[in-house]
Length: 155
Image 1: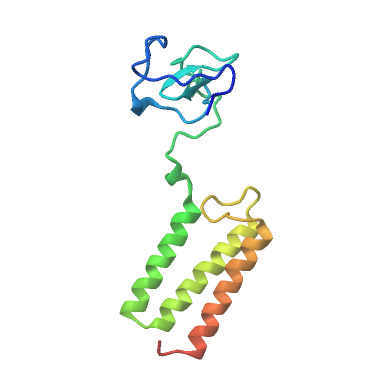
Image 2: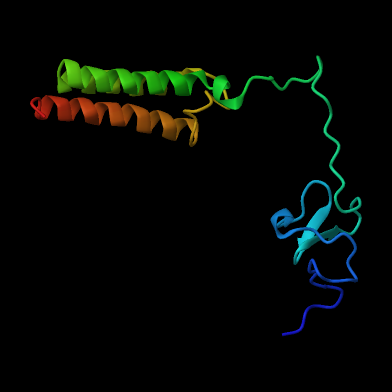
């Protein structure tokens, strides 16, 4: 099978390719630096900077709106839902299954309420689909849990 015109596969032992990269350095697609992997060695993409060049990333300063906290610390809604699930698990084991299911349903209603009241793009960690679908799923799951808790209280 022949390669398309202008396409050449570079290998680490190829003498025509200077500075051939190690197999661990292989890049699957064109990255922000304008380099792409062809076989084993990154080569310059048309119009891009030289292979191995790093893209310019501006330093974070006072004008930068991006918070410096890690992504997981910026998702308080996710952490509150996780705390509600943990609390409902403890209540199920220590008190009663109906109490734990009630706590889990309350957590789902709280997540649905937060999704309904907070603006777009919504609380990070509990925003998954469109607002209406999220609210419907949270509230209907809470209702289903409460119904099952009433129908089978000794489970």
